[in-house]
Image (cartoon, rainbow, N blue to C red):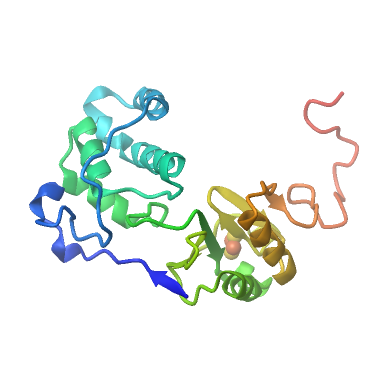
Length: 233
Ligand code: FES
């Protein structure tokens, strides 16, 4: 059994903040916390991010700040998402209208505007991954989590599953992104093993699941074999 995550309905969003809505939401679907504040770790990250933009253009930092919000949400609550209260805080910090922050957060798929499971499974379904077996990755994820449809969360709250477009790692297809990490060269059995390890709370090393060296051929490099790896004399 799984639970569906509410969707964004742009027609419900006004021009102001979450206070425009009687239920404290902006129509983004989930019950919303009333308050949000950056913690010390986030403040340090924000200070770094803001150095990249002139003060008159600090609204350009909206993407990094939304990433910082999402990372803090994961640290504090096991679910990486961006609440409307957090978007309002980002808008105030960057001196931009809240609606501009809502627009960005709801446009980019990497931001979750509803709570998700502890781990976000993002299956690449674009042609190279599909040709290399992404349907088997999807099947393994569904069998192991009980999730039936995209954007659902498993009943135990451990996993949310999404389909995404090319992750830019086609050379080691098929790819499953788990949270921030890419797991590559997967098949049905290795995907099941990966999910079981995550459920047990084990750290799983990202990268090729068959031991491929970076993006070299499966049997090892065929060119530049006389060059030492960087940092090795
Ligand atoms: S098609 Fe899946 S990473 Fe490019």
